[in-house]
Length: 425
Figure 1 (tube, rainbow, N blue to C red):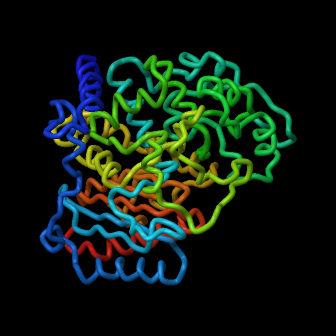
Figure 2: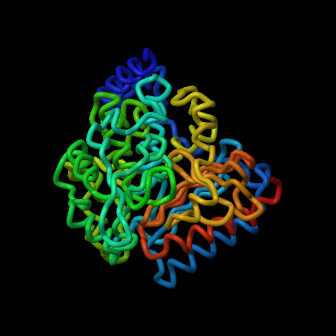
């Protein structure tokens, strides 16, 4: 608790002094003026430069072919960066090349940040992973489960906080299967509202039927949005403040948040074209306007340099530049698979072969089937942004684009490019 109070006070000092010449970040907060990107020699870090060149040429070719407006790729090991480069431009009509300070809508890469925020509350005893969600949000005490004939039945199992963090809650995203009867019921029931505050949104979702009994299947959905509401109750702060005080602030992530100052608008990367999602419309809206609803599932924008701070904290078992966000044992818990073959098989949108799902992100459980090493923790955003931290190979990456249609394509390409180039695991 003392650490949290001190961090909050330090962040207030940062806000007052960050623009002052000679200002030094106070102890307990990573200095935002000291870059997270520490260049290293690719060969010394175990990479073949010629094979890293394959990634470089591949992204250049994709930009030239009109597949992407622009992209930014960062690869590193042992805390140092072996490869970083921007490709193309930030967006149509722009001349700026994406760089470590370009702002990207990271969408679902918000989820691990909110999960870490929740884990800080677990460490303080304010949140219990195995407690019913109804302990924090009373409206989740009487849930119902959708039946094949369109009726509902009362849930026989409580939804636990752990279920929210592992997407085994029974909550869904309607846009994944937009023509299903359940998705239509969710849309009609208010799933896609963004004009209300998070605590009120959680009450709306509580009235919607679950896809499955909690804890029985993995379904990608609104789980982390509802976790955000739990965080608000457990912390006594709105989600934006809880995230800033507990994670992004201490890490010096001053360009990461649920909205950005208006003077940063020109630094946003933009997609080649508008890309509508069923029920959601165009997700690439103006992130310089403060939202009413703070979406723990996908509301944050960030830069590669900022997000690397978060990734390196996870890679270093909860600590970044002497600032500890989580205990090592908490990070270890996040990397433990929360699923079973039956749970994975019963769901939709699961990450793939060799993968499990931990608390807030996917985990590699069989690196004979998945390229990153066992224990790799990662997640991605619907616009194609992605990060991972691989403890087995002490490897990390951050990839940034704004192209929803090619998100899965670059997940495959990045794994091939990076692990083909890693010649000294």
